[in-house]
Length: 249
Image (cartoon, rainbow, N blue to C red; front, top):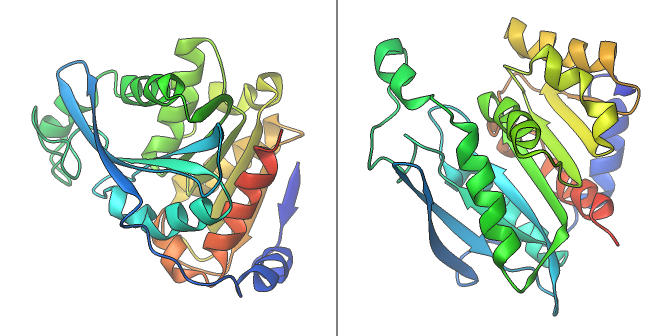
């Protein structure tokens, strides 16, 4: 397992990529709706700036967040020829037809977080049906609670995608950490060195304990999950580069 100290190797890497021209997802976005049980999930599909069947990345929001946090990453992936699907998970963003996530309301949220991994399965199946997507070259980016959702979806579906990136995973189970190496997928954990959440630190330590191939990158920030994308200069192009490299043929 590869571990980087706060800001050192990662900042050196992302500094060389930070000069990429700023792009915004917009006109190239296609609004999509995906059924997942009783939930109607809303998302934005951004096609990669290449012809033919392209690799694609599924982007999952954090708790009390939504898909808008990934606009810059989707645009950077597009520039690199990688398509993406930014998804509002059940109870978040526009995906609230059957209920809405309410911070600190455990009774309400318990009704939402039932088989929530099904949203990831449904979204990946949707991507695999597209003629312009190479279904053998898929990746997932999870944030906070949705990192564990991605891992559980792979176990439940019985197949893993090519790569997984987890931003401040706060609920990564021991089973998921133990499954990293057998999955033969590439796994990346990015967390802020100044983040105080003990669950995020524990998740990174599980990867270090149970995996020889998973990467843990610690960045100089106290922000959480998708907030890191705005807070850490150069992180967006660096993460897009990591995904692109791991989705090559």
